[in-house]
Amino acid sequence: MRSDEPSPSVQQNPQNRSRSGPGRRSFLAGAGTGLGIAAVGLGATAVARPEAPGRTPSFAPGRPIVFRGATVVTGDPQLGVQQNADVLVIDSVIRAVGPNLRTPSDAAVVDGRDRILMPGMIDTHRHMWQTVLRGVGAEWSIQNYFQFMYLGWAKFWRPEDVYAGNYLSMVEAINSGVTTSLDWSHALSTLDHAEAAADALFDSNGRARLAFSDLSAPAQEWAVPGGDADRLLRTRFASKNQLVTMQLAWDTPTEAAFPERPAWEFARDRDLMVTQHAGIWKFSPDNALQILRDNGFLLPTNTYVHGGSFPDSAYGLIADSGGNVSISAESELNAGQGYPPTGKVRERGIPISLSMDTSVWWSSDMFSAMRATLNADRGLDHQAAQADGKTVVNNDLRTEDVIHFATQGGADALGLGSSLGSITPGKLADLVMLRADTPSMVPLTNASHQIVFQATRAEVDTVLVNGRVLKYGGELISPDLKRARRLAEASRDYIRDMAGAKQWSEAQEPAPFKVA
Image 1 (spheres, rainbow, N blue to C red):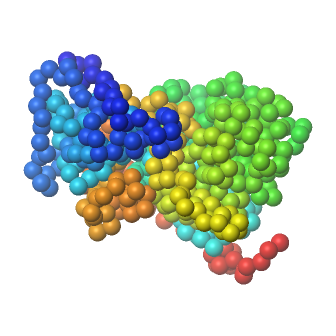
Image 2: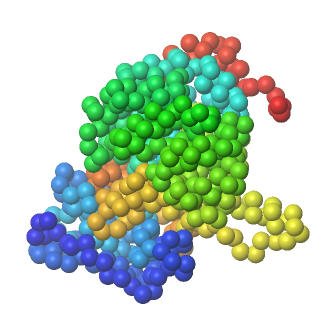
């Protein structure tokens, strides 16, 4: 640490104690106190003020950055919400949080007045390759999805189409304040496809997790020593400290014989996390988690995506194992995997993250994910109470809970919770600054409430990933939207031509409603 850097020491405030322990609803306890983490041991410093209005600071590599005078929703249980506070970033790390910080004299100053600073959001399940067909499946059920994507069109994707989808998805994510994305990448039918997926993630300059998968073959064919997943791991992912890292993805087991055992053993031997589509109506067997348990692979590092159609006993198994659940509420409510199980999962203390699934259907907007999760959970509570002739007096799931799911919950699910997910000194600087002076946001009364129910992607003003500014003043700096659009439009046109005009039209307007 240079002599002019602050020590990331914590100044704890007794008022910042959680109402219910260090987990749920705790990070708002410090709201309005203005207390937090002070920079100490800076040496020659100054309380630098914002540069001239309209002037873009120089974000030269290695230059410290300080956000001045923001409303800081830290996500840290001890720090809560800081009013008119500063956040100092040096060498990709958050160094201090608090009012009137003394900072290095050469720090780039970002004006945080009329702004909300929050941790970068983390999406734990997105099929990025499908982004080139954005919006095609808005009328689909999950049966339509399997018909058109799995059985029909997935085979048309070339490596360049996978690249185009992944690159555009990362452009969209970063622009929208999603600083870490898990690419649930099940179009990797060849090593060339996998290389293209990885290239796009690296080229974006965002933080990402490539969850290697291949829907055209069982996992035990490609997730084995010497298989494509192993080859990519060895050549592209030698370090777990990269911006882009790798894990594995497949569906929960369907047979007691457990033919997937070699793939699970490979994941264990390579220390790779596994994310699974799980608890899906009519597709996931009720005993899927028992099969994993009986074979020794019901692991704390497992993520279960959707999980809405599990029997009650399965939630107990997840809780006992220490696993976590990724809720994709827009997906579950529209496609029919099962009702978003937020309530059942929370009752058992299972960690939750949020995800957007695919923009072939939905918005890929984590603000929408937070709202959809809250709406689904509260709506179910009201319906259950009213069925008993009662009325919900106080809502259970709160706005700060879903912000936690979208930030720290995502970091924890990816095994990155000690370095991401909150604005805490010592953590990496993945930060998002929202405008609070727009017609949708004024007057700023309660930052956490307004992040969930009023903020949109249009309010995302500034985005940092690993301390690097990728968006500033509402303008995307990196990656390149024009390039992403050009590539995606070419891939869309190619896949549309391969599908043929008749099927392309049928896919966008499926037959009228029916139940099978």
